[in-house]
Each structure stands twice: as C-alpha cells, then as structure tokens.
Length: 308
Image (cartoon, rainbow, N blue to C red; front, side, top):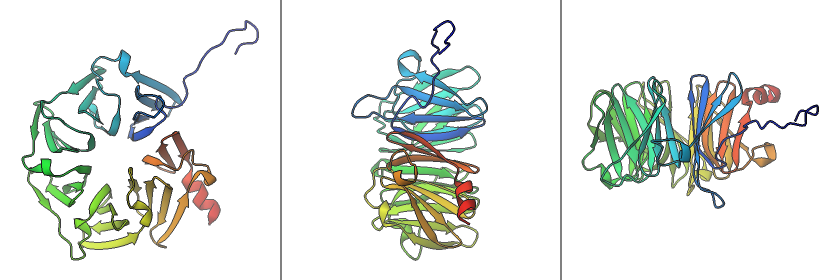
C-alpha cells in the first residue's frame, strides 16, 4: 500500500493450491501441484522462482492444453516437465511454453509415478504401466501390468524400480522387461507405498507391517527400520541422502538418523503447518513439506547443528 497516492498493489504469494500433493525441483525453480479440497476444486499449477522468491501460476481455466489440474506427481527433465494427473499425462514444453495432455481410449486412473530412461518415459498408474517413446511421441501399454496398481516409480543407476500393492519390480535400464524382486526376508513382497534412491541405496516404504527398508545393490544387502506410522496411510513420501532420510505420513514427518538408527517426529508442535504430509522435496539444507493446508519450509541442517 502506497500511503502517498492511496494505491494498492497485490503481490502473489504462496502456492495456488492449498492441498499440495506433488513437489519437484527444476533448476532454479520448484513446481507444485495439488488436488481438490472439501471447499474448493484444484485450479492449477504453481512455479516458485528461488532466485527472485516470486510465484508464478498456471490456471487451468486460462491455459490451453492443461486438461486436469489435479496433480499426483511431477518429473522435470531437460526439455519437458511431466505431470501425472488423475486422468492422464500432461507435458510442459520448455522451448515453446506449450502445454499438452495425452488422451487415451483406455482409462488411465491416477498416475502415481514416472521415471525417465533415455528416450523412454515410464508411467505408473492405478491401471498398470505405460511407456512413452518421447522422440516418437508414441504411447504403449505394458501387457499384463493392468493387474497391479503402480504406487511409485524411481530411476536408479542400473534399474528402473516400481513399487506396487503386491511387491517390488525392476527393469534394467535400456530394457523393457519387468521382473519381480526377491529377497530372503520377504521385504519385497509387501505392499509398497513409496520409493526413493540415493547413490546405490534404494529406500522402500512398506505397510503391513509399516517399515522403511534399505536395499544396497553393491552388496545385495537388506535392512529394516520399523515405523508403524506407515501402516494404512493414504499418502506416504520419502527422500534420502547418505546419512538421513525423511518420511512423510498423515501424522507428521519422521526423520531417521541412519548411523544412530534414531527416529524423530515433527508435527504442528514443531511448526509444521499441518500433520498430513503428502509430498516432500529436500534441497540441500532445506526441506519442503507439501501438506493439506499449504507448504512448510524447514531449515533442517540448522536444527541438527543446534541439537548437537
């Protein structure tokens, strides 16, 4: 407000959606998407510019090619940003600033995960796996995969990993053949809610029983960290580095100090805007929590330093 001429200027601030379900880092920006709430339907997608601390909105009512503003997952690459929605796949082309929606005669269901392997984009949804040849712009379905709900996908150095309701699957990079993963403990046969990978460590969030599983490919070892709060949760998200891992649940965020094998829970008591954490993004010493009531930014490294 300028008191001299009594004029008001409105600055955009905060995400377009209150109910944040997807976050992704893209260079110097962060993409955010959400879902409907009980009060309002989803409207569009937000891009936050870290260098200028400004917010940019893409409203579905005013953007041609953005058919579904309900976003479940986001995957940026060099040429495009891919958005998995409740009804299909959306693509934002950087060079042309154009939005495209892929329509299919087969009902998609919600897209829960995506992974890039060279020219191929793997797409995991409630109705199985699909494969997009990006240069050819050709979409195919993986026969037989419709029997499993794909809950998450992640790309590692050697394999693409898929977490489903009936266990863990892998596909070697450059190949198109998926195989179930076996382990002597039966961890990979559990219902899998989330995956993330750091170097050669694959982290797996399972339910019934709720636990965090670490699979190290270099020595084929498996390690379990029980966490009962993962059981029967609608949204689960994980992010990891070499010594710490964060787990987002409906009852707050959990921080695991891997060397000490020590869990710490963070909730609204610690400053989290809402306990229902649905998406997370770790960016160096800062982590972002997407919740049903907005987004929280936490300087976790400063907190750990003060504790120690």
